[in-house]
Image (tube, rainbow, N blue to C red; front, side, top):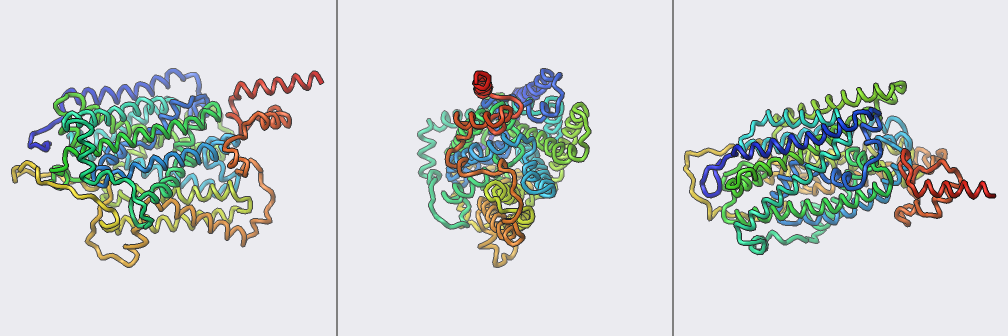
Length: 610
């Protein structure tokens, strides 16, 4: 690869050593957890870590789960090309954390569920549970295939690492420690991978600051280049990124991921107490703040270095998702091992996402399909099924990565998949927990209606991308580029993880309004359509006359007003007095908090004295 100054830059032996060493060490952590817990063979231990996890490792795992290799590579490119509007997501992360911790954590804890979609059968019927699980499996398999393929392709073009060798190796490593170690192996491996990801960003920022003469120079260049115009309060829903699209649409999109997505829910319900589960979400919020901030600073560093010679315009790289790997090879090549650290950081993001997806896919398949179909299965049989399904889904994800290599620009549709699929699902959950009058007919029609609308706008947006005046890509220069030999050729990648803004096909009437809707509004649209349709159909089909449902399936005004005060001293006493054995909703059904145990003991002593 040619650097910005015309020099040839390659991956050194030390880079390969560092990269391979860090990835093998990560796999070793997973295998250690497998060996350490080899005597614990229950399904609950495999899928939920025995519900004994603490907040800090779970929080780091939550952060790493969706900080994929695409995030490591794509977020700095976002700052480089579009500025720091993406930084506003710190507000979205805060809102998402409050919604997840104060509404959904108490709900899932008191119901003692393993699969998120068990709730849909409890509240509605089995059909909606099967549909919800199937939607999740399709979404996760497609997204995970893209997560494996996109970083591998970008890094292959820059470093020369064999594409298919890395694809298979990535899946194989995840399969090994997911199969043998279960959720504990995934979480503790995520902790190490999160540290590596952050270290990669720090190395880029530190080296860039040295080359440019300090962070002040980077900040000044970014200011004069228009990269620091973060806040735009334009209410136009067609604007790709504005304060309103990110705070309103982004908050709901991330809430749909952290509140009901099995990959995330499975982590925080593995905590031994509800307090630990809530704490893990708030610590995860801080982790997301740190990660997006370092990614943004990496992008500003890239702009400061390439402000006069854009590698994309100059065709040093073929797509925007190659910009950060190109920067790494350009500025860190003089330090053998550091490019390897960055590649390890990108692949750590990939490994954490893939392993999380495999473990969650196994959980929903076993809990939602196999256990109901074969309730007589023993714990030992379930353990073998869990491991077998881990291998199966690992192979499926590798296969989806292979399919992704043939899909070209259609792959960009997967970038909005959480908004298109999780939005209607979140709307269904909100119908279930807030409205007692909604019945299964209303829920089903609402879900189908919401999914139809979001798929319509989402697929339309990929076929007819928004025009440049809505995406607002900032100008870049090539005035300072070194003249290259005209005989040199540049390899162009089939697709980019940043949506392209030009198209040659004729544009229909809907292309410049409905299909140009900001991708962050896909989720709110799905929620609104699902809820409105569900309420109307329920009212027509007699939902208000249905039999009274179980009260623990709903969120009442006390949940919202008290923001989690259900575990207050007075209410603990009330619950214990009604039934000393009933501690659901306060702590994990498997492990009780010492304080509750003490109150139960005190209550029994009072009864004895009386």
